[in-house]
Image: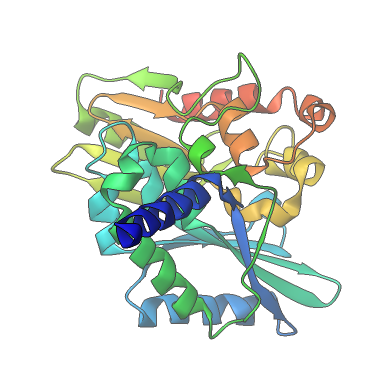
Length: 295
């Protein structure tokens, strides 16, 4: 009986610690004295050699000192799409490279953070798959650095699935509708054509299409000098560049995006209200740009 009680207490402690755990949006792998191109090549080769699929890459803000590499893996991609409320947004992870002070800092988006935030209660259902993905990613990146230091603020694990910045601010479940089409195929054709034309000074960074499920996710670089990344990123922190690019998700006949006031706050959880006010127009600017791509 005593063993049973002790065992129950242990389980409760582990469960409590798991829910009460603070999780950060990014993990710093380390630093390199090589050029950003050399580091980029190493990251890409390392991912490919370890069964990850590199989806695309680009320079946020059109700056040669910033680079993002988007990637996925088959097991993750096939699991998250089972979650009908835009689960496919969680299929893509990013490595961020930033060159400063003669070094290239290497970081990546933390799967434990993003998956809990985007998938909510569904995270637990597929937890073993996600934990393996996260562990394999760390093993893969261990050839590039040894720091693996969380950074970028933190949110409690049990709060991520229902996260919002402040009262009256949007949740994950409050997306912005960009357009509705007569069919999935029509929507896909329109968005692809607009991205090919770089409409609104955008660039297609990556694309994932699930033809059977009629779902597509586009990673979109925002390169306008008037209201794009070069305007808002320096104000809120370039160290978080792996938050980019922004996404459009087409599910069935409807194209949506995560609300800027949710997505920006989630990826920059330390933002003060004062800093948020400096980019007051950014959520609307992003919406206008992505809406233009869907028309």
